[in-house]
Image (cartoon, rainbow, N blue to C red; front, side):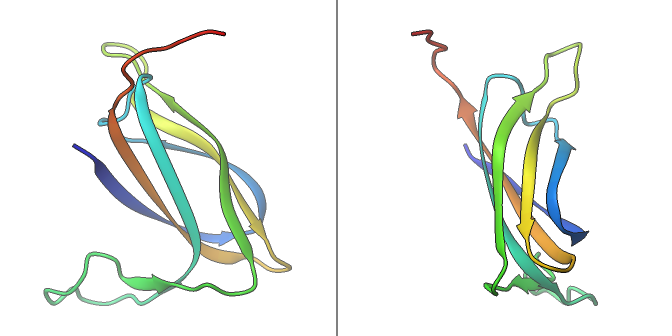
Length: 110
């Protein structure tokens, strides 16, 4: 079963190395990460959506590369490292959605 979490990174610009520890992720996890500029709207939930704000598809190129899940039971914490790219002349707020799928079925070398 897929699970997702959203993370708001405030004031991002350029290429930033990120790490997000989350127990559902381990070294064998298949992980997908999306990113977009974000306009936060802080305030009470009031039974509305979990996301407080909305993505803004503006002029900035916002994307993720180099996704690397990590974690071993009884050892390293579960989570994912990635590079967040924000190509814009000033810092922006960015929302990242991290989705973990089932573990991979096999690791192959060619």
